[in-house]
Image (tube, rainbow, N blue to C red):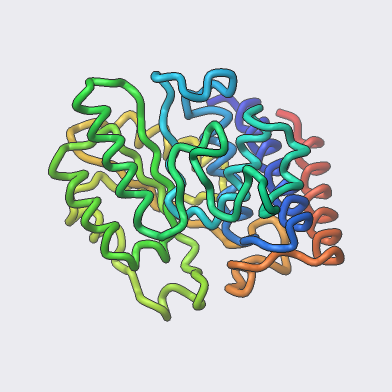
Length: 284
C-alpha cells in the first residue's frame, strides 16, 4: 500500500479516537481503553479492507464484521458513523434510553451491526456459523471476527475454533486484541493464555501476529492473512496498548470499563489533537 493511503488511515484512526472520547463523555459510562487500543485496526478494516456499503447495509456481497467483545462497541459505532451508517450527532445518544447505540450492540436496531453481543464467547460462535453458511452457499465474502484476549477465557470460544477447523473455514479471519488486560486486571494474572500462538496452531489455525497500533503493520499483516487461503481458519493476534493515544490511560486496567470525566476528556482530546497536527504535518 502506498504511503498516502497509510497516512489517510492514520488520520482516520485519530478521528475515531477523538470520537470515542466525546462519545463516552456524553454517555457518562462505557469502556474507554479497548476502543482506543483498537482504533487503528478498525480504521484499516472499515476504510480499506472490508467490503461494505452504508447505503446498502444488507447487501449480500458484503463482508461480515462480528464484534464478539461487544463491550468495546464505542469504536464500532464511531467507525460506522464515520462510514456513513448513522449521523455522527447520534453518537451523543450512546447508552441513553431508547438510543440505537446501547452499551452492547443490538443488530435489530442499527444497520451495520451484524450480531448482538454482550455475553463473551457468543459472538465468535455466530461468526463461525456465518462463515460456514458462506462456505455452503459458495459466497466469496470474508467473515471478520473481532475478539478480546480476556474473552478467550470462555470455553465456548474454543468449541467454536474446533468447528472452524473441522469445516475448513478459510473465509473466517479472527482478530484478537492482545492487550493482556481485562476487567479484573492483567490477563496474565487472571488466567494466563501463553503460549497463545501455539494454542491456535494446535486448533488448526494459520496464525499471524502484528503490532495493532502500527498502521503499516496492521495493513501488511492483514493483507498477508487475507491472501493465505489453504483450507484453514486464520487468526491475527494484535499486540495493542489499552488506552492507546492518551498517556494517562495507556496500559492501566482501571480504564477497561470507565469513561473519562470532563477534565480527563479535555486532556485526552488535547493530546489526540496534538497528534493529529503532527500527522498532518507529515504529509507523504
